Length: 314
Image 1 (cartoon, rainbow, N blue to C red):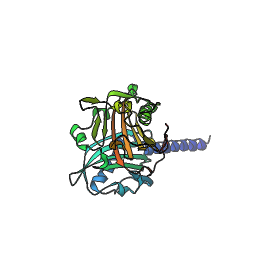
Image 2: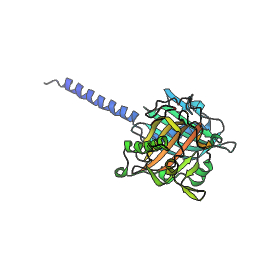
Image 3: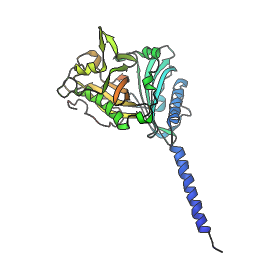
Image 4: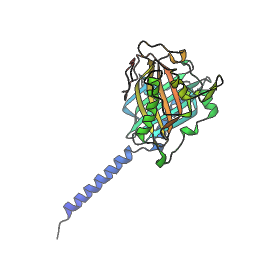
């Protein structure tokens, strides 16, 4: 009689390894719905003023407006409801982000961006940019967002054959920052913008509107060198959503060494989260949340690429 015990043992070990691999995959995989569920849990904690039960890793890294904090430090007692919110996600990397308007108990509003990274069923990174009226100069208009609702351009599910690639999406967003950095100089590079691209800053619509009888396009400010002397640094592409065609970029704004701003609106140093909705390589809508901070303040995160603070070149 032939002893098949070694073969049976090997087969059993192979099955066990396969089951273990499938278990690990099940534990680590988190699709769009799964990632949005983590965001739901975070917002639930915000309005209930409790982070109890939020699945956070022991080594979680947390910042608010660039400053390191604890999970409870990203909540505030006055938060009451979330009347405006939309999300993006990158399931391949476990990234998700939301822009929201928070209504507070006193009737005021707070503009908010929340970015989460999820790994092995737990949140490993939480980054928020939070601003109230007056904390980013005159850029304020959450009521605009509440009145118009979430734009269709921010909720698209683009058919896979028509999607821009991960890197093409970043390239379009990068073209915007390059135009920002070089406008008003001989090295000016126009951004990849559509003629009717809309831009909202803390909810306030700043382009795609009539101003003094002239239609104000998003490219106009760059073409006229309106932002010359501005500098940006610590730039990151924090979440890239290929299905939605949206990139969230985190960046710092300031002034180049020795430069003076052309207007008070661009004189402040800020930390910014900026969403770019992109289609076929062109930016069609921009939505940003901005908060004023000294330009020497760190962001707490490693930049991807770009000039240093105060640098004059691209």
